[in-house]
Length: 580
Image (cartoon, rainbow, N blue to C red; front, side, top):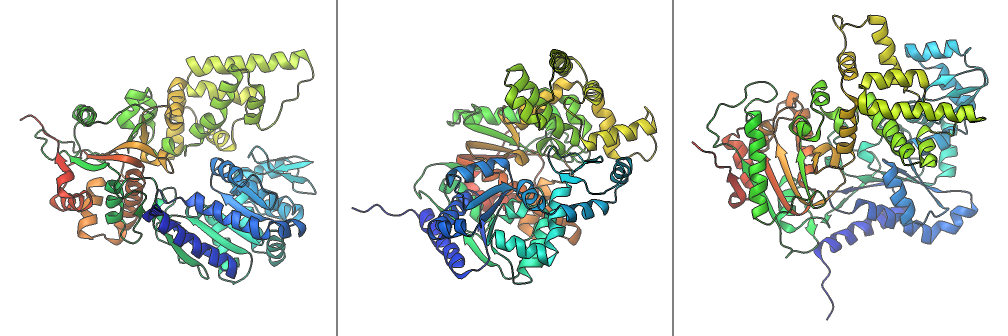
């Protein structure tokens, strides 16, 4: 007896067939793959098709298929799946763009001459101007001397986009890369996507381009609509290999435009919604916590719900269950960084490492110190971007002294103490953005001034926070705790997920979003907020494999409750009981 092909497999095969047809016809395409659809699998299958049919020909011609990824993790995964085939170049946008830019030294120098920021102009003047120096990109810091110009991270995609505006550069690009795949196109640098749209799609020329992604999972950009790229065939992949039917049913009601078929129609699981409308006490009235539970009641309700779900068979061990919270303030006290959480008005700075200080310490200093303490010196120097010049025992002793002091300051000093130390030692070197803030504060003086930017106010406040709190933030962002925010789990999946929707962030008004979802009454000024909330809600509730529970702690209107009942079914919506 032949086993029946699952509905998800059938949907995936149909989408893959359309991708193959586009490749055969030399047609640009966009694969829109919802949560759990297997976007990366589709991309890899398309690469394997090209390898099988054109691999030897591409190699003989000195050509490659370019595959641009959004993250280094995705780059490694895709490269491994195609066994690093020589006909395929898989790289992040910065790595790929630089590999093309480095061939155009004269054009790069001209682009550097065109830089306009005050700090860049000062650096160019201090370095003696742009002459015939080599332009390089390594550590992501902008600098210039009489022999070398080093580019900032932000320069690379912008310069790449400007180079694509030149016809000669486009011809060379197409000769080198007759096929271009872009993973997570919706989050790819907007300068690059605009250049590709203008100079390739609109012009009807250039390589065959395949876009892979999902505009509903755009939570790092402000462009929430499905972009209508010219000369690009749209392909929907209506499959979900991650979640059970109970969860997928909710997703399909939220997103009827891209219905998903499940892997196993009979797989057991649940999707439930809990609200706190029966709370009898006084609710918060301060923005952006309006209509929310008081802090102590909020924590108690979350714990009570976890106990209730545990009794129903949930296992809240971190490896099996994630609690996804919108605001970090809700978990900061538990995780050990309450002062740091109060610094930021919006918590993108945590989950996305959007703040320059947090990004630098989380991505450079912390892994460097961990490698140093574990005596993994190769990894340590990799985080520096280069091996140091050590010519004598004194050089080695100097390095050891500085790194020992850095490790000690991390545990006992403030963030400001660590910044001051690194400013003197340059081991590792502070980023340009941090140096700019430090220089500005030095000019303005030790006390905040009238009209000072929020960025500088936050930076001043950060300096007094114990660095130990930043270590805990890094553990949180790295996923070493049972808690997470919706932002920090894009692309991840867990057996069970509890999503907590609360106040605390002006960018996400959950009770308003649910109300608008039912009424459709969304004013022009409210569209951005609605789509931000919709996309983040979609990302959050699409993470579980088996069990989903959503808890709303703010008062929900009748319209909001109607939206919830439509999504989850009335029998799966429950009011949390509260004592009179």
